[in-house]
Length: 112
Image (tube, rainbow, N blue to C red; front, side):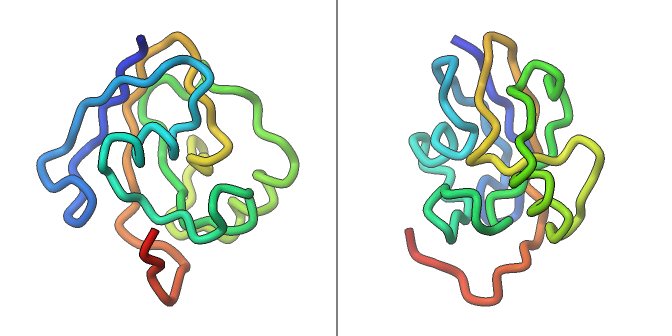
């Protein structure tokens, strides 16, 4: 099973984390299943950017981005060339290293 290494984030995982997820699982689902409560204000329907992550390693192993995701990412805080919406990026068979940006454009945090 692929390993997802999450770099330290002051709120979600201050010491960083390493989790596993079956291929075909979205990064967002994998994080939530492992008690890393990343924001996902639209309930993973690709309607916001609160689950934005930067894929530091393994970016090219993820599924291709659809136009909706590309359009939404333009609004994400801290956008980088290897940014993805974690609800739309599905784990393949390779390990990943991800970083959760420090901020989102969400003005009111949801309690999911």
